[in-house]
Length: 217
View 1 (cartoon, rainbow, N blue to C red):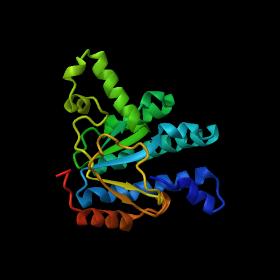
View 2: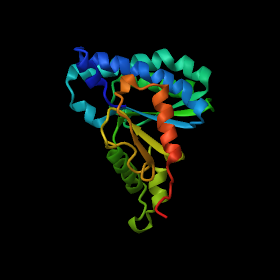
View 3: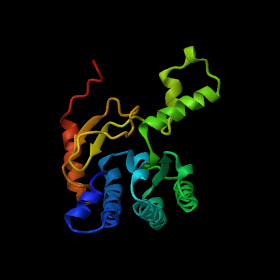
View 4: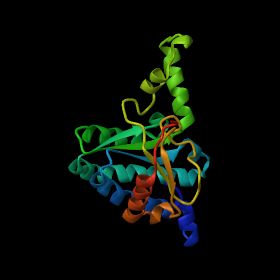
């Protein structure tokens, strides 16, 4: 979900204003995604690289995330959406950890859609963490398979993504679901994330529908 800061800059607003609008843009997409047959929706909310931003912006982001989780958990429960965090949540402030864990617990019974919140996430570090887990389990190197690594990813047990949408006009995946997205179709949307609407989602799904997926064959 890229483009929050550029959205704010274009309007002469501070970066946090773009992030506020970005949070608002999430809500309608989560509401309509199950209606489109989407069973798993993953949102890249906060990356490891985001720590490089100013302390003020990072603090503001954490506050927004904490508030958004608290305010929307009831609706997610009503919608049948189950929340799962993927990433190194233990590095986040304690109040944010509590809010996200509470949301995971309260939505655990949701069976309409799984919502992955990629928080303090890095695709490379996810693979590192999987390898470390295998090393800690003393799995002999010669016996390690792709299946072993799959079992230790943050998304263990989940299907691989069919489609990855990048907003903001940039044409790269930026360390997102590197292992899982090996065969995902990519759609690069010019809209900045705060301007991303249901019509943009539908256009991306329509583009995906026109693709022929061969998986290397």
